[in-house]
Amino acid sequence: MSEWTDAIVGERMTVDNQFNERVAASRFSSQEWGLIMTAAEFEIENADDAEAARVVADTSSLPAIMPELENLRSQMAGMGGAPGGGDAGGSGGGVVDSIKGALGLGGGSGGPSDEELEAAERLVQEYADELQAHLEEVGKWDQVRVAYQE
Image 1 (cartoon, rainbow, N blue to C red):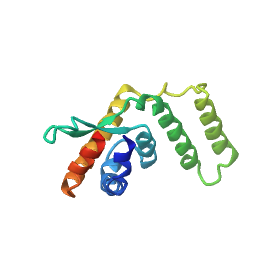
Image 2: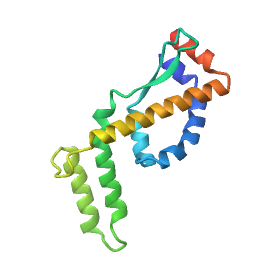
Image 3: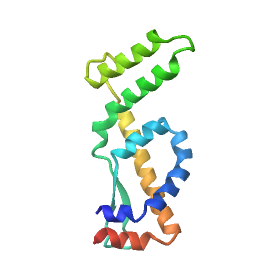
């Protein structure tokens, strides 16, 4: 199944560039979006039916990476949050907090909410829809759909 996605790497890069604006308008940073996309896989539902076929996002792995979003946010806040002269105190807390978070010992917010997971799932499906629309626009959709079936 990965062969069909390998065949559209260039098309995905184009969609990635076009989708950057949508990501910027979302609640997720580009770094967070990159992490989200590592957990997303794409499939073609009803690939054998030219009219009903569509790209769908498999987001079943997203819950596993959602705590990492919090860690990423903590790290980014630690790096960007310290004033110019705040060396050991500011950066030490960020590192310690991120290590605690990675070990599940942090006293943070308890992790991402269901609302955050749903927002990530929606955004990934929007990306899938955009990918399909782009493939149709450049005339590669049928080729990709057939490759998916093989």
